[in-house]
Amino acid sequence: MKTTTGSTGGRPMVMGTRGVVSSGHYLATEIGLGVLRGGGNAMDAAAAVGFALALLKPHQCGIAGEAPILVRSAAEDAVWAISGHGTAPAAATIEHFRGLGVAAIPSDGFLPAIVPPAVAGWIRLLERFGTIRLADALAPAVELAESGFVMYDALRDSIAGCAERMRREWPSSAEVFLPGGQPPASGQVWPNPGWAATLRKLLDADARCRDRLDGLRAAHDAFYRGPIAEAIVAFSRDNPVPDAAGGPHAGLLTTADFAAYEPRVEEPVRADYRGVTVFKCGPWTQGPVLLQSLNLLANFDLRGMGHNSADTIHTVVECMKLAYADREFYYGDPAFVPVPLERLLSAEYAAERAGLVRPDASMDLRPGGLPAIRAEAIGDVDAAVAAAGPADGDTTKLEVIDAAGNMVSATPSGGWLTASPVIPGMGFPLGTRGQMFSLVPEHPNALQPGKRPRTTLTPSLAIGGGSMLAFGSPGGDCQDQWALQFFLNVVAFGMGLQEAVEAPTFWTNHFPGSFYPRSAEPGSLHVETRLDPAVREELAKRGHRLREPGDWAGGNTLAASADLAAGVLAAAASPRLEPAYAAAW
Image (cartoon, rainbow, N blue to C red; front, side, top):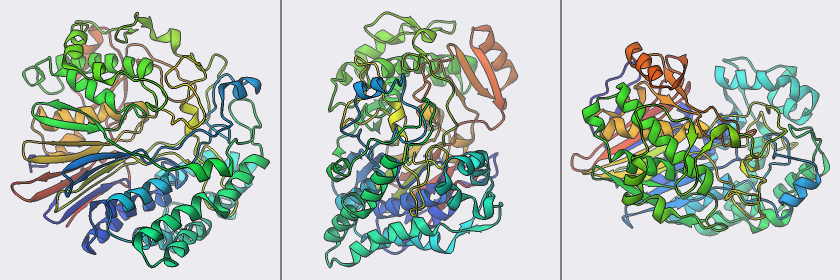
C-alpha cells in the first residue's frame, strides 16, 4: 500500500510497526491501542473497541445491536466470519404478523426485536481467537460509562431529535438520555450508570472463574441465561409501545430464544481482483455484492478510463446495480434458503452480466436468470401500506491489525437510541434489525423463526501483493458501494489509505432499500459536489438522475493496512465521520 496520505480533509494517515486501530470514536480507538500495548492481539483489541463503541455511539450501535466480524488469524493463516447477527424469535412468523394486520415489520418499537447478538459475538471472538480475559476487554468501557465521557455534537443531535418521543412514549429512555429533562449539551460529561451496572454483571461472572475460557462462558450465560435476559423479555412483553406499523405492539422474544442463541463461526466468501483476494461475510449480509461488483468490473479497464471520470463512475454504478439486483432476489440466511453463490460469484456469470452495461443509465432491476422489472414495481413489495418510519441510527466501524498479521474488520450497528425504549435500569434499548425481514413467503429473506435477517452490515478484508487490508464504511445500503470505491481507489488507482477514504464518492438508491419501507429511486446517482462539474454534467446526459447532497456527504470509510515486507502498518479514518479516528503504535 502507498504511504503517501494525499489528505485534503485535515487528517493524517497514521503509521506504526506494532499495531493500528481505526474506529468510529477516538476514545474507542485509544482503548484498542491500549490493549495492544498491554500485549493483546488484534482480536483482543477489537473486542475492547467493540464494547466501547456500544457505549460511546448509542445512536449508531448498542450493546443489544449487531456486530458481524471478519477475522484473519495469523496462526492459522486463515480468514473466518463471526456472524454477530441475532435470530428471529420462535414466535416470529409471517402468520403472526398477518394476524396483527401488519403489512411490513416496522423500524421501531418491539415487534422487530431479534435476539441481541453483540455481546455473544465479542465473547466468541475472544474465545476463539483472543488471549485476554473478558475483564481486560470490557472493563475500560464499563469504567467509562461510570465516570462519563464528553458529549459530542452528533450524539447530542440524535438525542435531541428523539427527545419529544422519549418524553411522550419512552420514559425509561428519557431517564437515561435526558438528564434534567433535556439532551446533554455538547461538551458536558455524560455517564450511563445503568449501562455500567448491567455490564458489571458480566465482569462479576468472569471474576468468579479461574480459567479464561470458563470466565468468558460464564459472562455469556450472565447475559443470555439469567436476570438480564429475563428483564429484557419481561419489559418488551409487558409494555407494548407505539410503532410505525400502527401499534402499540409488544415484543416476541422469550428467555428460551435468549438461551438458545450462539453466534456462528463460518467460512467467508471471497473473490480475486488484480491479484488481491477480498473476503466478505456470506449472504446473510449484503457482503457478496462487493465481490459480484468486482467480478463485473474485472471486465473493464477502469485504470484506462481514469479515476472518477464519467466513464468510470457510470461503469461502476451500472455494475453495482446488477449486483444489488441479485442481492434483492437471491440473498438470505443460507441456513434456511439455497443461495446460488457459486454461480453468482463465477467469472463466467460476471462476463455474461457485464454485457448488460450500456452507454445510458439503466432504470430496471435486472437479476440474473429472471426477467427485468421496474424498480418501482417492487419498492413497496413488503410495505404496501407503509408510511415513512422514524429515523433510525446509522452504523459504525472498526479495523485492527497487529504486528503478527492478525486482522479484524467489524461493523457494529443496531440497538439505536432512536428506535426502541431503554430497558429500565439497563441503560440500553433492544435492536430492531427484524425490520429487514420480508413478509413475502417466497422471498429468500422471508421471516422465519430462528433465521438471521439479511442485513447491510458488511466488514471487509483483503490480502494480496504482500499487503493486507481491513476496511469498510457505515451507511446502510451504501456500505458496500463506498467500500468498493475505497478498494478501487487503493488497488486500481494506487492511492494511499487516507487519500482513498477522502476521495469524492457516489452512490445509488436504484434498488429497493433494505430498511422499512423499502422504497427505491430508479436511476438515482448521488455524487459529492467536490466531483468535477463536467463529469457531473456528462453523467446527467447519460440519464443518471443526479442528486448533489454536498461536498462531504458520503463514504465514511475506515481502513487499516499492513505491508508485510516492510513491516509497516497504517490506518486512516474519513473526516466525514465526526469522532472517528485512527491511531498507530
